[in-house]
Image (cartoon, rainbow, N blue to C red):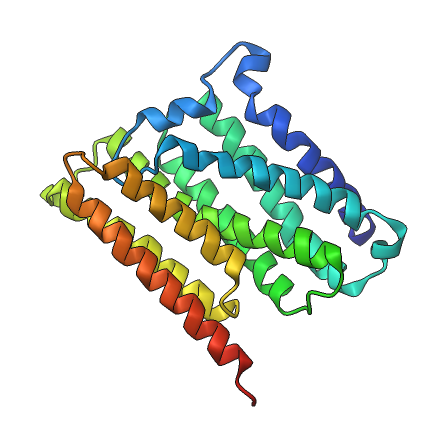
Length: 251
């Protein structure tokens, strides 16, 4: 199975772009962008989803790089292949299911599994020194951006699944629910940053999502959500700074 993992890490990223437009290719289902029609206050502004293009490109670069003969026997790369392949497979599953079925709790379950795989890959990546251009500009950005964005997307999926299925959060005011979910995303980010040495790529993806939540709510019916997202950005930024300072202290 170990010898099969380099091939999986090469093939699965190559499937990401076509599966992202699966509904258009097969003429059935609905495009991924239709998911944004479920506009709860925690959904970022549409431009924020362009980060998937960066993640796809990095995943393709990772696939080709890790398959090179020089990396096939590298134990550092080998430790990443398992969770990376799991993350790519779950990304493909989520995109396919999201286009072929209505939104719901099943999509939340898939993206939570994706979050676990992405976080495992990120933790393993940050434990290795970023030696060489590929580690610095492909490996660390890929798993940092993926884990950071999926951390935010998990909360967005939670909100979307609740809205689609009619779950009303036990009658709680929708504005308070949205503010709580935004703080939940920031709290998850702060907790993860402590474990990943304040990884700047992870922090950047989460800050990107929170900033887009501010843009989405500016001038809207829930301005308090924008303020909360700003506080969430502050929390994430401070957590990343403290984690990086702590990581540089001599033992």
